[in-house]
Amino acid sequence: MIEIPVFDTTGKEVGKVSVDEAAFGGKVHLKLLRDVVVMYLANKRQGTASTKRRGEVEGSTRKPWKQKHTGRARSGTVRSPLWRKGGVIFGPQPRDYRYDMPKQMKRHALDSALLSKFRDKETKILSGYAPAKAKTSEFAKLLKALGIQGSVLVGTKAIDKNAYLSARNVPRTMLMPVADFNAYDVVKHKTLLLTKDAFEALVAARKG
Image 1 (cartoon, rainbow, N blue to C red):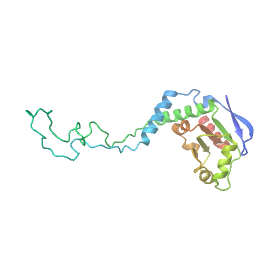
Image 2 (image 1 turned 90 degrees about the horizontal axis):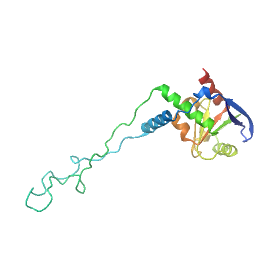
Image 3 (image 1 turned 120 degrees about the vertical axis):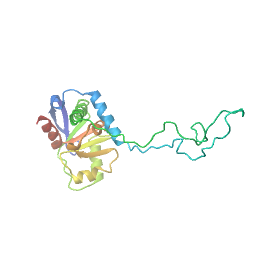
Image 4 (image 1 turned 180 degrees about the horizontal axis):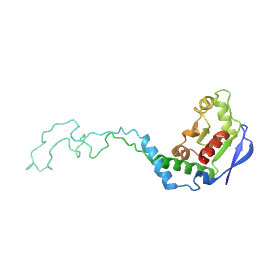
């Protein structure tokens, strides 16, 4: 069992909750986690890099000089990749880098990412957070009270418009419902901050 501290909105620790490692796979599968993170990064690539080959650059197709008896190296075209302003050899062309993996693998990778955050004590649970209005300064003050520095992923049980608007302009902060979590976002951020009902929803979903 792993114990995770629970804090109120003033930053005071009010208790701990226990989580069974077996509910999250019981083991951090590093290779699977790496493979899934690489997939998410590949899917973010635009794939618009483009270079011109020798048949696409501007220039004459005439042979610059005759083949023999000039004392110079033979040459067939000014568009040769060996020449200045010539084409590019095996340069990048627009392509789609996207690929997918089975849902079960992505789910197991997410469990491994969450379990690693629990084990490394990089998770905090927030109790009683229900903003009545969107206010970025109040959310920044909350993070400071919790002692959170660096990047943080904030998980809520459902979509909370006020919480989202409060957090969106805080640097290196991402807020989303736990149902939208993926392994890449979890490992990318230094700290995982979960509301209490969001944590209970994560555990309940895996018990089911």
